[in-house]
Amino acid sequence: MKKVVTKDLIDNLSKLAKINLTKEQEEKYVGEFSAVMGYMEEIKNINVDDVQETSRITKEENVLRKDVVKQSLDQKEALKNSKNTSNGYFLVPAIFKED
Image (cartoon, rainbow, N blue to C red; front, side, top):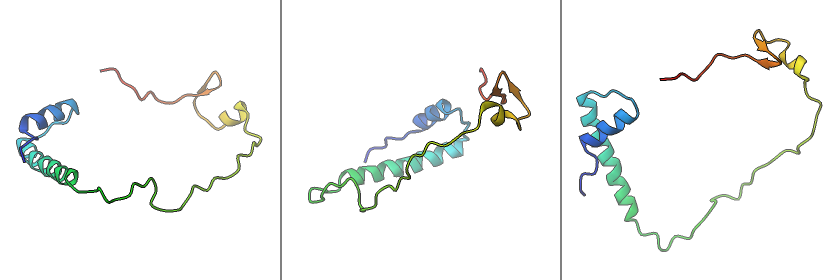
């Protein structure tokens, strides 16, 4: 098997993921990812000609409840216990930041 995973690849992936890796971690991941890729090569070579295709391996089915329309909270009642509201909506802290 040729070595597909290199230090350069790990370095590039870590930069894309914005993860700082030490040289020891890079070496470790080269070995681990190479082992995984080798295992994938083994799986690709398994003969499955006599294996019947299946979409499910059990006879279980989803059990769904009936969809029943019920009375819901009105907007004022839904917001009454919230500390922060504005114009009929919940106010929550911003989760997106600009880089």
